[in-house]
Length: 231
Image (tube, rainbow, N blue to C red; front, top):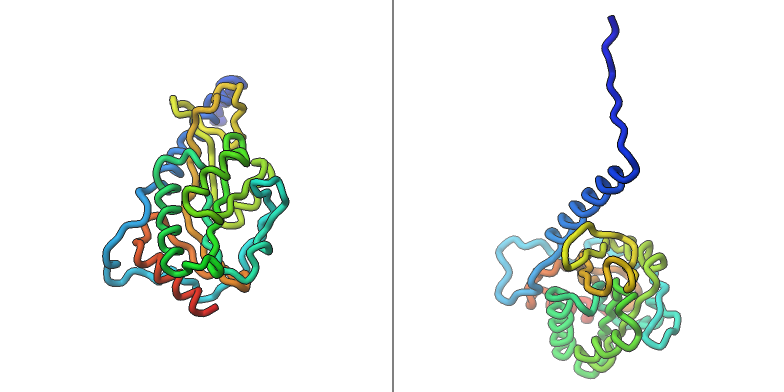
């Protein structure tokens, strides 16, 4: 006698609920894996790996928009060393801390502002309008660049840098990869769970380093100084 096989079918509603739970779990894991309190100070522990790449490669291209609505890419900062960071203006911790660290270090290493440029790419284009972005980056320096693009344009480009992001309602509930509609269920009160990395690109457009959010301030400074000196 053959073995009976039982099939279980899920209604579309149950399937959507299950997918929502799975998406929420993945978003939570992403959030826990990438959030942090920003760069720390103090001497690095013995044996800390060198964040500089042994084999630099061309940085992935970016085709975004600046706060004037103009199309921009890495070519507009050609010849300068770039500290590139992805985040959003309502980020509660890692984004402002990292940008503050970069701004302070830039003031030390490049007081004239001619060799090192900070570029902030927003992953929250719905709320981070040109006006919001312009005010935000101005608090970290008069010439910090802020770029973004619609999510469907932005996502495949930032994935080239290994950056993932999802939107999560602050009040709780499953996360979503689609940009929230301010008039929808999310409203405008949500968080963006995102991979946090600082990328250092040299004047020849080569990706030289990737630094985690908990990289110590002196280690971040050393990397930027090295790339500037080699340029």
